[in-house]
Image 1 (cartoon, rainbow, N blue to C red):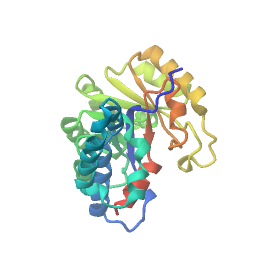
Image 2 (image 1 turned 180 degrees about the vertical axis):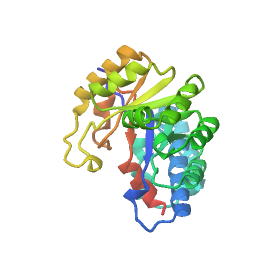
Image 3 (image 1 turned 135 degrees about the horizontal axis):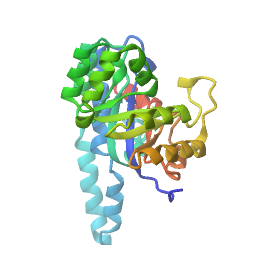
Length: 273
């Protein structure tokens, strides 16, 4: 078990336009997404301000606070009122930031456009891919891709060409996947993926996305992560499912490297629409 630590090693933002208004345009959604990501990326280590302040002589505190306040106020993302500034404060305590684009209901070209708008934090989702050309486009433009275990199984048995092409890129890409149970661990262990960076372990807590599921809990999630690390010692475990301001620290107190956020991130995105 890890020591209590409010900072998140790895924060994963998950996009899902279906949680917002159905009539929101892709352009508006993309702009709001980029603002939300930019905000968390740029001010992700805001707690450093507090550390810096505490290390300063008392007579410099006022000048320090004025400088920081001016910098924040000059940014266009901080001109939407106190509520929108405060709601994501807990998400800004991170060291590494990724954005998993889960809007796989979009046509492929629109999906790529949305990913380009999000920027350098992007992690592509394998579910958007339906043919070899699309797979190679993504693997050649961005080497980090999320392949859930159910999609891996589907490609193995139903999309042999995609699966073989995907494997041929293994030494030059970074793979993410999911773990829900021991069957998923057994599958991933059998593959021997050279660069398996992260596994999203879920659902940790109850979540509307998996209605009726009670969640596996942080202790069970930690057991699954430890089992994964028997096969992939350096894989990062990311807690997913029902993560919010009042429970994320429970995950960090166990062996999870970080947390993945969808609902609370989409609430922030909604504020920019």
